[in-house]
Amino acid sequence: AAYAHTHDSSYLVPALAVLDYLVDSGDAALATRPGDEPPELVRAALLRDLARAASLASTPHRRAATRALAQRLADELGRGGERTVFADRDAYLIGGILAADSAADATSVARALAALDTLLRRVYAPRRPVRHVAAPGGAGRALLQDQVQVAWTCLAAARATRDPHYLTVAQDLAAVVERDFGDSGVGAYYDAAASGAAAPALVERAKPLLDDLLPGANATAARMLLGLAHATGDNAYRRRAEITLETLMGGAIGEGLRASSYLAAVHDYLQDR
Image (cartoon, rainbow, N blue to C red):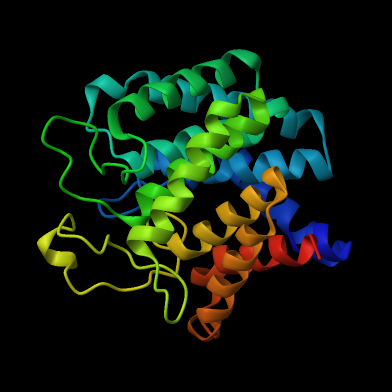
């Protein structure tokens, strides 16, 4: 991301070295201990970065690794009936494949789109927050991470297919985020909805910034809003992203790697200036 903004190869060279090491390490580079990130989420993150690398410095090895990783994630999505489906995690997996787009094979992309359509049928309704758990009785929790991951993935689907339905869903969820999670006085977004839909443990709301199991929710919100600004030409989305980044700037200073997604969102913002 820094290289795309600055064209300084001192950013690109170490990034490619790390990515190539991870690819060559195979499953040894993934989480293997209890409490580590689930391997499929690590693969999805790696796939996004591999696809970006393939667009900047393509090699046959990186292209092959991107296709193989997309196929593996598509297979894991196909086993969704065997596990509990969480909206934020599944959207992140699907988004990883769709972000690869032309670097992935057409079958993997088609399977990701089918998985997204299934997820939307199970957790989404217009003008309502996305449900956290895609199961009967799972409607009680409305979390920011679910909204922004599903909206971000719908934007990727809209780019891949040019189907206006996905853009409509992303815009609707952006409106839900502003209505139910926004802080109109200061800016940025709370982790849980303002209504009683939040889980008891989340009654005291916070504004998540730093990366954890998934990228920081406010950083993803900013990137989603910037994507909507680009897709629609509506500068109000860009202004909302700018306010979010400005509001949380102090919380990112000194946090190192845990602020990576915030930094990526800032680069997205600067790239369009």
